[in-house]
Length: 298
Image (cartoon, rainbow, N blue to C red; front, side, top):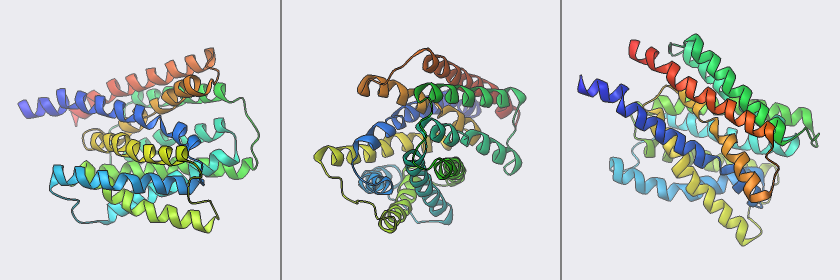
């Protein structure tokens, strides 16, 4: 009884706190990507490369080493490489608002797959919470960017929509891997898989590989640290929470990014952003509460 209570009570609350902290840290990503003066895929490569030594150290302390590779870990790494590359190029080709909205379709995809494939129970209130969270994120991002045309909107829109698919696949692969592996091990092998794929993509696309300034290098190093702490926290929480719940909670990322953009880059943060952020956070809270009875009933 005590272990079960820990798994559904205090343990679940701890996992939710860690998840929220990780999502807030990942909200730094757009800021650091803007400061890293290199190609879109190349920035992703440096993020993975700088994260690997830290992940190896953490894995050694937690599990005695990184352990063997596996196909699920390789799948997570490939999906994450595609996620970063497609999202960065989507932002470059279409408006920031549309790129963010389309990439935020991840909760819908994760919930649908978790329901249809993994038979996770989904209550009507949870589906309403998903709609509320996604709607709030959409409202906030639309308020931030009224719709700049971009250099190639159709292609950028397609890339951004694909980002949601790749990130959903990453979430589901990490959740499956976390059933038998530690969070640091999962992060290490997925990052090790993603790094060369991003480097190859950057080379094939003719991107500048090296940041041009010291500030660019600092931003890339910061992305590596952010990857370990932010994505590592999310990976850890995925071993204790349903993927459908996790994918909704991480929608606090655009809220954090909007606040940082306002503070650091003087981007206007008006009533539309505030209302959208409040709606998104309300959806997050409802999703957390709606998932509890289903988890306990299962």
